Length: 51
Image (cartoon, rainbow, N blue to C red; front, side, top):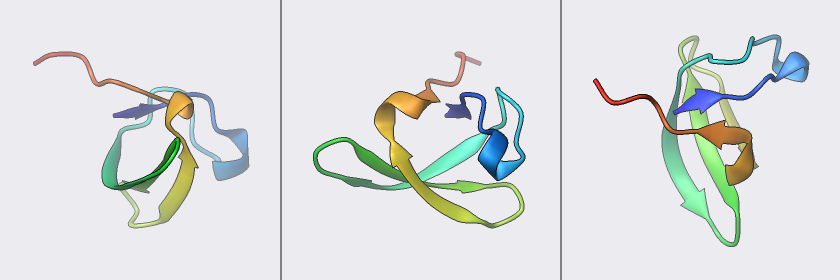
């Protein structure tokens, strides 16, 4: 997954993130490359392009 613009996380739009858990109804837990884990709305993430 890739983040939308997340200025509060100091991460630009397109930053890769790994989904680590999904919670109902619309919350996703994800980890960024530096090891930090966050929870956000599913709508704040976009699918990674096909390889």
